[in-house]
Length: 165
Image (cartoon, rainbow, N blue to C red):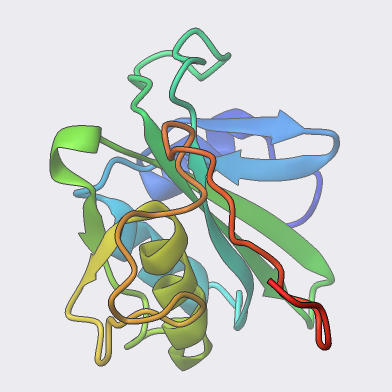
């Protein structure tokens, strides 16, 4: 696969909608196709998972998506790199609010362990079969997920040394 691979060839190869975004190939597998597509990309030489993150589209359900892809509140975005070919691909998976879970990529890309924990911590999206799905940034007893668009804005008082209360 080169950067000249067409969207139709990508869609046919991986069995899911594909687009081009500013010269980068983007695949849109369903949750059911997610592991299979990621595994096929790994087999095709995409040996490095550069990034895995979440997005909350709470009020942006009319965003542009390819035909056949139904917008959900959450999206998990994975960026993969084929170093030998100097090629990148982005994978965008829609995740419904009612079942905010997705398969873990840990068995394919062990380096995603911390990235999946961060998405879990900040967005509340869980990853099935993750080896240690616990909070990574917030305290264990923290309630809520701070990067969700409906998370209430709060305040933590700052205490300065030597200032009397």
